[in-house]
Length: 445
Image 1 (cartoon, helix red, strand yellow):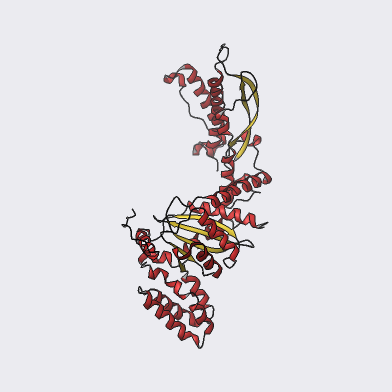
Image 2 (spheres, rainbow, N blue to C red):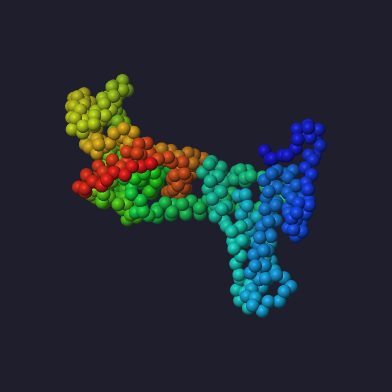
């Protein structure tokens, strides 16, 4: 609802609200020229106030924008009517231009300046700032990730007054769509080109997810201070060896350093596990997601048997001694082998890597963070939530663009991982795992 300064009594009577009286600026001790301009802006503000506070502010802003461009012209060219032999540029009339305003493109008349010999145009920094289309693209991406469709984009913009609205452009469905595609393409490029060697990454989560009918694999990193960082995304599944190898290789090529040890947390895909081993070798420790393992095992059981088995599995994993934990899990597998051989085989597959965090001595809150792929799944849920209104997925490239935009938007919502104060201990354990001498522990604030 537009802002209104009307009093309750004025609204009830149906009369036009009375604008507050103001003291002329010249009576407040301002210089005459400045006072005249201030008075003019105040009058314009008051005139448009009935359309809402933002509309009034926009009207004044447009006037100030004209003054700033005129002032820059004077600075570059010099004052009108004064001969200057050293003048390097001259006024050259005006031409049509467009500026970004309130999620719209607005036509204006902009001043032109050319070099004194007339051979080249002199750009105006003020106009370049006002016309920055990136500002419009940012607004479009934010609104569409929030669920606003291209068809209803114009209805979701702030009111800027009837006069401005009548002149505005850039809000049609096709214009919004073009800018959204361009902006999300830049986000995808940004995500896939981020250098990864500038910060110490202790943990990398890898998991697959769907966007429409397309399968993607995403990567999420955790830095030494517990900050979560989206690392990349490719189209494919965790079972596609070529796809996951290209993702893991790309992370290495962009600077992901495993020389001091790194922990990968994965869903259990065999191709994904093989790719990590091929690219990073023994420097990479791998933790299989326990929640995925639970689902894989219990899928072989009737509903009535599942709660007891889950309790036994979690009790075994809670054993801090990795040898004792592995023995407990093997005992569960033996008990299942006769009546539920499928469940027993599923439990034994990759069993040792469900205990990697035990061997690294991880405990407490950090254990809950590292025993499953839940952190990356939370990011994926944010990505899906942003794309919930998309009805037709035209291509894998579209899915990648939306995923990248959603991942970067999710980064703004991230908190440090649970148990981040225990990460220095994890760093030391990873160094021991690759045979490096332990460095002095650094506390995290």
